[in-house]
Image (tube, rainbow, N blue to C red; front, side, top):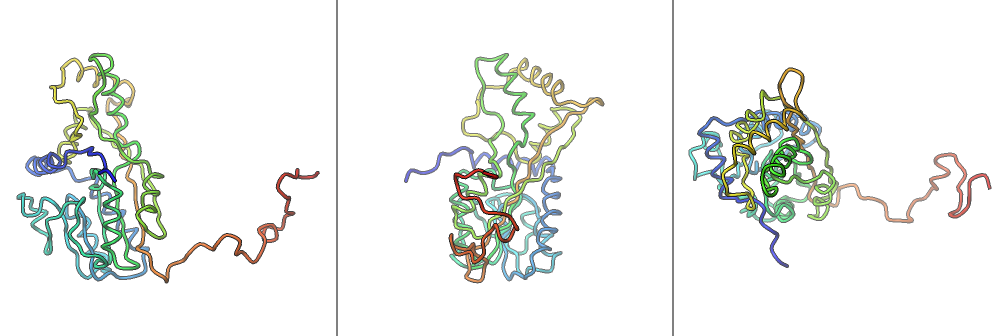
Length: 304
C-alpha cells in the first residue's frame, strides 16, 4: 500500500507550537476540553492503572486525570518533550518524547489513552488510531478531542472570497477538518469496539479577524499545510478578507464570530466481556409483536 498523503508539515507544526509558548500560549480551548473530559471520565465506572496523554499541548488533561482519582499513573507523550523549553512539558512527572504518528508503546501495555486538540494535525490519522488500539490492553479506553467539522469556516470562506477577487486563484490557508461521521468510521476501521463520536460547537467572539489570527498563532495553529502558498500575503487581499469577514460574520457590536467544532472520540480495545450486537436472524421475538402492530410483508400496501 502507498503511504498516506502528507497534508501537514509536522516539523513546522512543532516550530509553531514552540513559538506559541514563547509568545504566551492561548489555552482556553484546551482548558474547555479538559473540563468536558472530566465529565466524560466521571461516567466511566472503572479505574485505570496506566494512562498516556498523547500530544495535548498543555498539562490540562493530566491535571484532570489526577483530579479524577481514577488513574494511578499518567505519562505525557509529546514530540516537544526534551526538545523545547516548554515549562508545561517539563512539569510532567513521567514523560516520553513521541510523535503521534509513531508511538513507542508496546502492544497491550496501556489502560487509557487521552488526547486533546492534537490529533487533527496528524497526517495518517487511521494509522495513529490503529497504533493506539494496539497499544491498549483488552478493554482499554481511548478518549480524545480534536478540532473537526466546520472549525474556522468563517476564516476559510473569507480568505477564499478575497483571494478569488484579488489574486489569480485560491490557496489553502485553513486546514481541512474531518467530519464527525468520518471519524466514527475511522474508529471502526481501526478495530475499536463500541465506538462513539459526538461534536460540541463553540462560537467564540473576537474583536476582529486579526485578533482571531493572533490567537491561532498563540495556539500554535497557524497555517502549516504543505501546499500553503509561500508568497507573502498581499495587503489588498488581507484588507478584502477583513472586510468580507466583518460583513458576513460580524455582530452588531462590531465583534466577529469564529466557529470551533470539538469532535469527541471514544472507543474500547476489544474484550470478550463487552456487549456485542446480535447476529442477524437471532431475534426470538418479532419487532411487530413488541410494538403491538401488524406486520406487513414487503411489497404489500397498508390497508390493502
